[in-house]
Length: 403
Ligand code: NAD
View 1 (cartoon, rainbow, N blue to C red):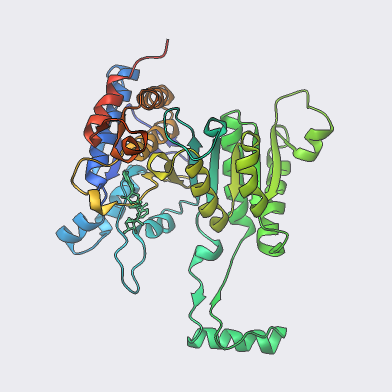
View 2: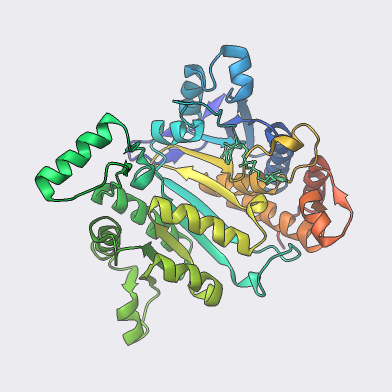
């Protein structure tokens, strides 16, 4: 096995026959993983003609892990994910029950995968609810570790909530009625800035037009508002030569290329993505805003079934389908594997195998342009549907070296 190496500066060194971890996932996971892995392997083969390849290391997670080990995420799996550094993951069931932490949340916290990254782009041929889905070309960077998702909350009748209400009344004259549950929204400078830094680095590396800081700082000044201020601070202190604020930009176009840094209040942003779609490009935002916004943007281009995603930290990264396990289609070979296939494309870009990623993206685009689609979209378009595995083969057939 040729594992990816972590260098002193936390950058990764990827061998030509890299070992990449994969968790198949539950429900439709095995079907879509099979399709995605064969598509990714083919893209690498077409791009590098045997000079590069991935050796996939299967890692147990979810229902299969539970059946074999009695744990949904055994320690050996965490150790393997760590060894692999970069992994691909199918969707995992979140077993319902008190005290069970989502496996996805566990992985994000363990590996400090603080940026949830979701590129959203339109594929011609996909049914969309808006008139100009082709104007959508955005990449959302959502903070993944704090905000109201930190899990600091108490039921209205818990001892903790009672104590907290008492403390607030006694010390800050904040009066909350006895039927009030309490959640805490932590937003820190360090975590906000590392997220915005990643978004700006991405924008610079990919020559994107702008980074928009999305926040609700008009109401929540010291959390959401602070996120915005800290975001501008990172841009001006660390990326002075490559960025410009929107207000400066509007005074006159700079002589050299710059990423424009702007901010929008969340509610306005939900309008803007519909009414001024092409003015938005890279988006950096807090956890809750990002959760809502990324699904809304994905809906503009035809929904979650085709939107890829990744959870990325400073070293480790897990690329995943953004949808769930769709249990009713489990084992039927009918699910749409596009989300995981495109997440594989993101993985290839992340490890620097850009040519393979370009070939993969172009082949998916070509299949959609000819309305070669799985049942979820075929029934809307009223065309013959392909099985999950057939869609994978259709994509592979269309792969070619760019001219
Ligand atoms: P879901 O995404 O599984 O399904 C929502 C709807 O979309 C269903 O109608 C489903 O059939 C359809 N669908 C989803 N993916 C599809 C695909 N690739 N092809 C065709 N149709 C598709 O969401 P849910 O029903 O809320 O959740 C089911 C399970 O998945 C839950 O246990 C949940 O916790 C888990 N989940 C996991 C992840 C993850 O691992 N990242 C994300 C979301 C939900």
